[in-house]
Image (tube, rainbow, N blue to C red; front, side):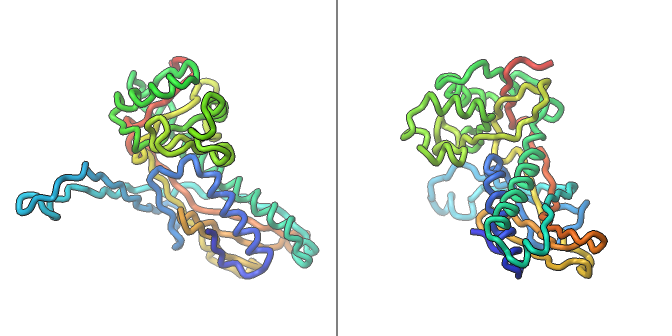
Length: 303
């Protein structure tokens, strides 16, 4: 559920609609290790994302095997906050004074989709030929989309030392749609799988199978899908607090309570031409923490 600190009706509508749409847009990468921070974070600083490594549960058998025998570890991975992303739209005094709900909902949704897609593209962009080792285990030609080829990907995950049940299979739009056409709706999750781009958890042995529209359009990459261990990529974000609010008509943040995703909003006017602006923004960073725990699935062998 989205919450907002903006006070104007227009601001609340925009911010709440934007955070909902942004959260939808990062669905493809929702299982990767992440942390969003509402507090002010300067560009160039670091946010620590925890990665948990917990072994298979053991039998309780004191005094030799007791609670203190728990072997799970937590590693903190530093994610540099290096990107400052923003987008917004212009509006008139009349738009604000009359506050047509449809106008402000549409504007908020557009901001949210723009920011969410930018976040997803930056994260998925890490899955490239330069970052991921070029080996038989980390790059595999997915020649066609059939039930068998998708089922065989569990084996490809194991060869790369990836537990499929703790990983995400990202499928480009064409591959995802093709897979749906081969399956019965009651198996893949029905209408929700079409609307949200997520197959039923555990399908084909993967923790999740998600539609991803953020793969690179570079034909040389030939990337159509990817298997990504959920601890292979980390990302973090934060809104940026304006240092001076004298020129702002309004500033506030909106937060998704489930993911913690937070976006800052500023509403202001350019007095030289009387045009008003509503802008959403956040500081952001991402890092490929474990390159060997990614399998690039390509349409043809790459150089």
